[in-house]
Length: 206
Length: 232
Image (cartoon, rainbow over all chains, first blue to last red; front, side, top):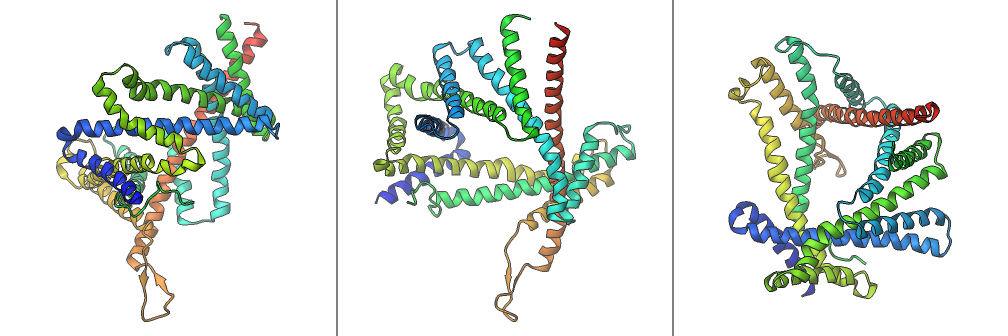
């Protein structure tokens, strides 16, 4: 009985949202409300996740385990951010500065490290995968795309050169479209399986 | 330069050096900056969720709303309580209903997004390439449009064939002999090339962005060092 209620909850919610695509005006309020509840639950799940992170670092600090100094930094940074965020008004310049002046340098520097990592990874691809059709086309495409991204090649509009350049630029689109359609097909099948109760990710397997 | 600008500039400089120090190997300073980032981001996320989601969708209607609004909030309140209480191991089963609600909602949104947001527009874009009426809107010649449309169609079919893992059971030969149809194999080989092209272009895009970020950081560090050395 309990299982039926749970499956019905998932199916009815999903079917109502799906019906909303076809009866947009009639069901707009109901689907809007369901999506609001969904956003609320996702937000709450996020807070629970942050709570677990906090608990994990707190335990590490309390037992003075390895890496507890770094965990202490996480806890202090978290508490200071939450404290500033709740006590200062939402449009506070200090809160904005505190968050952005830490996030932006770290994120940009991590992206910079990614450039070096990607360069080495691309050179390693031949060593690990060998000279396959995909690895060769990957390298050729990456090289041509990098050259095209520099915008040095600018033939006059209407010339054969411009037409070929446009053709080469559009060539990766074919594969990307195929990949996107494949992902969509996969999403469609998984979604239908959940709505029909064939897949039940909400059930505790333990 | 005023005091706050100087302080935030120094913070940015130190964090950049700490993160970039990873290039010479994993070290304490890199981890220090990374853990600080995790703490600040988790705190920011909490404040953002509390201010943008929990307050307007749950607490405000409950505390300041009309009786009608309060009644409507009872259902999400109940779902939220079930989700929170399920963190206690004895009450774990309570999470099923809110998670089932979320799974159903997400599945429906994924189906809608996949069909109306991806499959129909992408298939339309492939088919529309064969429509001569659309060719006159661009400066390219008609034969180039035809070549483009045919290549696009072959690429899409090839890519989808590459990800097709269905196989044919051969009854006459060995019972364990499973193989894909030959046409599918040929199309999959074509698809392999197109997937390589697509991934290569994606790689180039991400690599260019990462390279720009690296240049930005180097310029930032150079600017700060020049300011200190120059005394400005």
